[in-house]
Length: 114
Image: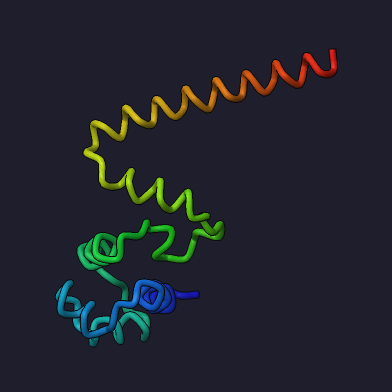
């Protein structure tokens, strides 16, 4: 899939019309047509699309092959709402919880085999 195909797929998933996208972002349909013909999008337009569509660069450019489940999507949605300073704190907490769980799992499996 190319960039335009990905944009159109995301718009369809989010039920956003071409008219609404143009109105809300200021990116004209002629710009999208130019991209279809091979011209390169500018960084500011890509940034507008990422923000407006609430997607990652990987999603926009089609590099994400793994589909998130509903819990992962919900977690990501709320994480994006946090201020940057809080994001760092929560990442640290989640890493700690994951490490603790991993250690517990290892101890449990060792006690079963030992």
